[in-house]
Image (cartoon, rainbow, N blue to C red; front, side, top):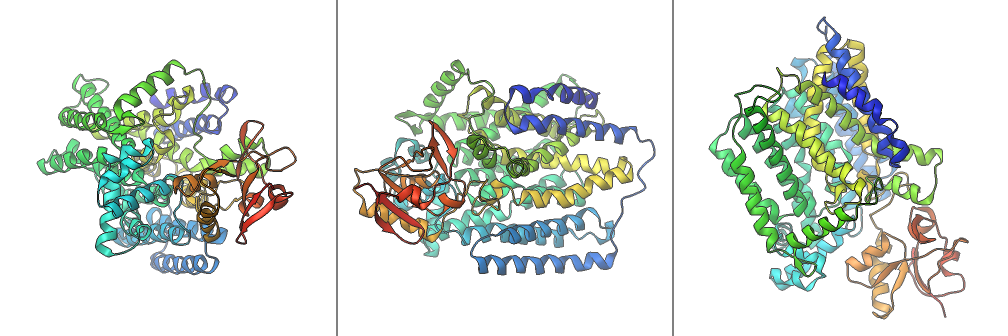
Length: 623
C-alpha cells in the first residue's frame, strides 16, 4: 500500500519542476517512482531468488591486491601532479568499484569483512589526505575562520581570545571543543595548527565508516553492513566534511556515534549505552549548533515513533524502550548552552528565535532555495548557461544524493511492512523525512537559518542503513536479472559519480569551468598575505568569490566581490586577479546578481598599474 501511494505521489510530483526551478524537482519524483516500482516488483515475485551471480574465489583473492596497487598509483599521481587530477579521481572511483564488487558479489564463505574494512579505510584515507596535503592553506570558507580562532586561543592560552573576533564567530566561545582539540594536538605534538587539524579531526574522519558499519550490523548481516559503510565512505557529503574540516565535521562524528548508541538503547537499553549517549549529547552543543539540533530531531523522531507504537498506530509493538528522558536531557542541555552563547550582540537562542520568526513572516520567497546543494547548479544557473556539459555536470553533482534517497525510499518501504517494523527502523524512516524537510523543503520558503546545506551528511547516515536494507530485500526477492542490474548500478555508477561530484572535490574539481574550487595554490595564499601587507588597511580590494573570503577570514585585508562589466572588465579601481579567473568558475557581480564570469588579465589590469605579481596573482590599481 505504501509503495502504491508513494508511486502516486511521485507521479503527482512530476509537474513540480514547473514551479520549483531547482534540479532536485526534476530528479526526486522519478527516483521516488522508480523505488516504489522496484519494491512492487520484488513483492509481486512469488518464487524466492535463486541467487545472484558470484565471482570465483581466485578472482576475489586478487582484488585486494588490485585495490592497494591502484591506491599506490593514486598516491604517486597525486604527488606528481601536486593535486587530484581527473585520472586520480577516476582511479579512486575504480577502487570503490573493486571494494563494492567484493562486498556484493562474493560467496558467503569468501567474504572477509575485516579485509574489506581495511581496504575501505585505506581508500578513505587516500582520498581525504591526498586532497588535504596537496592544498595550500586549508579547504573551504569557514575553515579559515576556525584556523584563526584556534591560533588565537593557542597564542593567548585562553578562550577569551574568541571574543575579540566578529560577533558571528563569538558563538564558539561556548562551543569550543573543536578548537580545544586542535590546540591540544598542536601543543602536545609540537606541530603547526594546520597539521594538528589534519592529524586530529582529519584522521578521525577517515574512521567514520566504522561507525556506520557498527550501526548497520545492528540491523543486518556483515555483507550489507559493509555495503552501508562503503556507500557512506564514498559519498560526496562524507568526503566534503572530511576536506572542509570545521566544527560541523566534528559534530558529524558525534552525531554518528550518538546514532549508534541510540539504536543500541532502542534495541537493548544497556545502562552503559545510556551513560555514553548522555556524554555525547552533552558534548554536541559544545561542538556545533547544527549537529546538536540534528541529534535533537532524531531523538524527537524516536519519541514520536515510541508514542505511536504505544498507541498501536500504525503497528502494534511491545518491543520498544523509552527514550523520552534522553530527549528531555538533550533539550535541557541544548537550551542552557544556547541561552548563554554570545551571538550578534545578543544570545544565540534569542537571536535565532527572532530571525526565525522574521523569516517566517517574510517567507514570500516561495520556491527559491537560498542555499543550493550543488556548486555547479548554482554557478551555471547564475551564469544563465544550459549547455550539454553544464547539464551533465549538474546531474553528476546531484546523482549521489538522488541515488541514496532512492535506495533509502526502497528500504523505508521494506521496513514499513508491519512484520518488519521496529522502534529503531521506524525512527530511521521518520528522522530521514524530518531531516530531508529541513534540508530541502523549509529552504523553499526562504528560511535558511538552519543551514540546510550542512544537513545532507547527517541525512546520509540513516538513508545508507535503510538503503542497504532495501537492496538486501531486492537481492533476495526480485528477479535475479533485475537485482543484478540494480547492484551493478551501485557498483559502477555510484563510486564514479560520487568521487567526481563538486562537493567531493572542493580542493580541485574535475570540471573546473563548472564547479567552484575552494582549495588554493601556494601563489594564491601568498598573494593574500602580500596584498594585505602592501595595501593600506583603509583601501579595500576587489576580487572574485570565493577568493575574497580568504582575505576577510584570515583578517589579511578587506576584500569585496568585484563587479564585471558586459565587456569582461572589472569595474572597480583596485583589483586582484588570479589565474583561476581566466579558466575556472569565479563568481562576480554582474548586473546586480552574482554570476560566473571569466576575466582575463587584460580585463583586470588593462589601463591599471601593476603593484604586485607573483606569476599567478596580480594586484592592479588605477593611477
